[in-house]
Image (cartoon, rainbow, N blue to C red; front, side, top):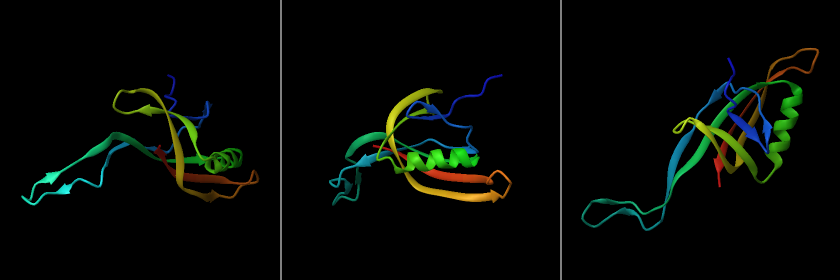
Length: 120
């Protein structure tokens, strides 16, 4: 049985994530809010903006590769869309990058890397 390729950065397939979520949100204009009558008015500028919190258990080789992607201002991301159950492409950036040593080994350790991908 083949596994689903959840993420690819700049056409580089990434290892299987430990955790993976796809969150969708709306971007609202400043003109929205509560009216004088007490009703809520939403002025949605953009709907369905994708945010993906993800974490991996990685070898040192992959930790270096993830650090390189973190430095890029934008990444071409292919991700598994949980609404359509298909691969979708978009441009994103990495926010909140965190690398933690899980276990020290003779091969420079096992690492947990976690971050959030945000769509432009």
